[in-house]
Amino acid sequence: MSSFRTEKDLLGEKQIPSENYFGIHTTRSAENFPLPVSTTKKTLIHALAKVKKACVIANSELDFVPEDIASAIAQACTEVTEGKFNNQFPTSSLQGGAGTSTNMNVNEVLANRALEILGKEKGDYETVHPLETVNLHQSTNDVYPTALKVAAIEQLRLLSENCAVLQQSLQNKEKEFAPIVKVGITELQEAIPLTLGVEFGAFADTIARDRWRSFKSEERLRLVNLGGTAIGTGLTAPKKYIFLVIEKLRNITGLNLSRGENCVDQTANNDIFIEVSGCLKALAANLMKIARDLRLLHMKKEISLPPRQAGSSIMPGKVNPVICETVIQTAIRIKANDMQITEAVSLGSLQINEFMPLIAESLLESLELLNTITIIFAKQIDGITANEDICRKTLEDSETLITALLPYIGYEKATNLLEEFHTTKDISLFDFLEQKLGPDVRKFFQPANLTSLGY
Image 1 (cartoon, rainbow, N blue to C red):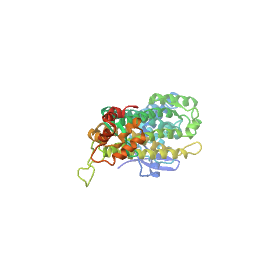
Image 2 (cartoon, rainbow, N blue to C red):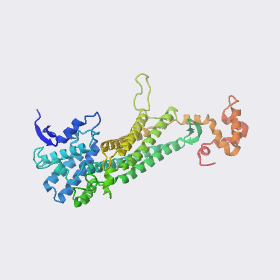
Image 3 (spheres, rainbow, N blue to C red):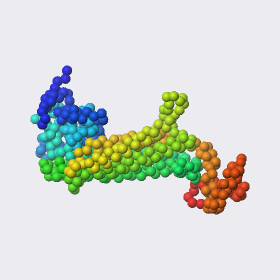
Image 4 (cartoon, helix red, strand yellow):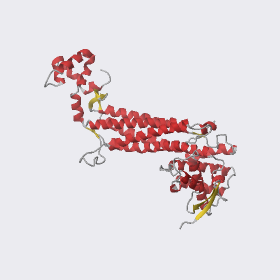
């Protein structure tokens, strides 16, 4: 049977299993928020550990924390960042208190792991205290949003790389399909010709813009309020610490972070997360558009999507475009997250945003979803093949080809020729136009002429 240790807080005492690295604050959080949602994102937990490491190193250099204790806490921070204690963070992703439960969960795990490193018993808070040592000169209100920005920047850098992979997959198809001429579609009706390669090139260019947006979004997150403590004024934190801790965080993360000039603003107002989420929503919208277009092209049999799994429990041989459907659903989820972020940012009160946990969960979920789905989608696109014969036949059967003659015969005459063609039987449009306009008319319908810039 498990042994227990007794821990105490403002509300009283609790028995904590001795093997647990988290303590009374985390336990109360688990009891208060037993919601059927995921626990706090591990990317945020790991980023918080980096922030805590910067804080303890700064506090040690300024002689606020003894060197041996600071070293143990720093080692614990590194281990948490590496994921060694992921099972010790049970706090719900939705919680009251602007993220205090998650901050305390991290404080407790770091304190108890540091005690273990020092050869002490867990819960020996006279030696290392979650609040008085690990959380020294900090508030949830400065470490939590700072950690969220660190986690988001790291995910954005990965997203930029993954967008590059998806863009390259589309550009490869642009080159491969360059010679294949087909009919374009507007209003879900046949329009004028283009190449299948140009169609995929347009997809690639949209992702190129998203890649740039994700890269530029990092700049918007580099201003942090670490050192601002409760409301951004820095109350209870020494001035030397406030300037030093940012330097330490830059060194630990490798990110070009800086303290905001107005940390009261940085603490109270979180509109930057709406801005970043908007860029993610734009990528989601583009992914949805591309996935829907690929489904349509696959249905028209102009392309073939690589099969991924049997599509029906009742129809033998049926294969569905499941990857495209997953992309579409993922995009819907990201759009919903954007709405949640917008609403949560709007509902902040005066000097604090109480709803930071929802902002963090929504933003990091969107980033993690996009980082996964872009790679899945790139692999799907790599396997796409073109059905050139079907593209050619659809083109040759399309009456919209007569549009190529407008510079030479005008709109009205072209319309009259089409009306006359509709009264004929057993003759192709090409043969009909040749009879009416002469044999040279066919040169206007060569692929190079149909798809070149201008006439």
